[in-house]
Length: 181
Image (cartoon, rainbow, N blue to C red; front, top):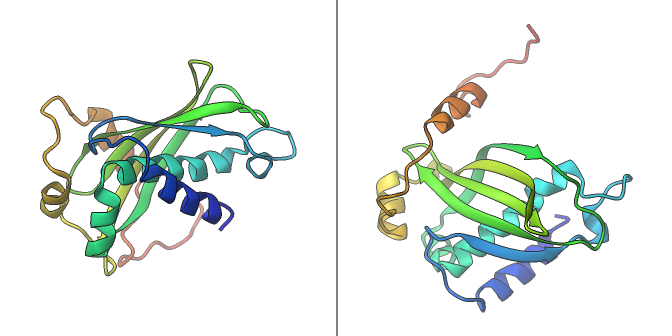
């Protein structure tokens, strides 16, 4: 909810920026706002993921697939994510969110996103997303029919499969009891 207005503004402005292909990299220029920081006066660790949502929306809108996804009733949901931090983004600092799809498999679409300031990576995340329709995953065939085939050079890094397997929880229809071991 805290980024709702910013997201709506982004959906409007991204539609007016130069067009991209979904397999291209997007670069979204932003500035650290007071709502992005914590008591230490830098971007809060949890806020990075919320801001990265904006980068993925920017890519989808500029590639023209956001409108097509909405028409089909597809909703993007994050199924896994990990982040590493290098430096802190400070209040009023300018930075860009660099976003690109690094591959897909039968379970997810994988993004790499970076927070970049002054030509340096401040944080990098890998995000696994799914598209769902009426609570069910959209098939890879339907996704490729809508997105178009990825470039031949796009090859999902091998370590992504291990990362997904090691971090996955059981599906929503299977039990996942809580018990510390």
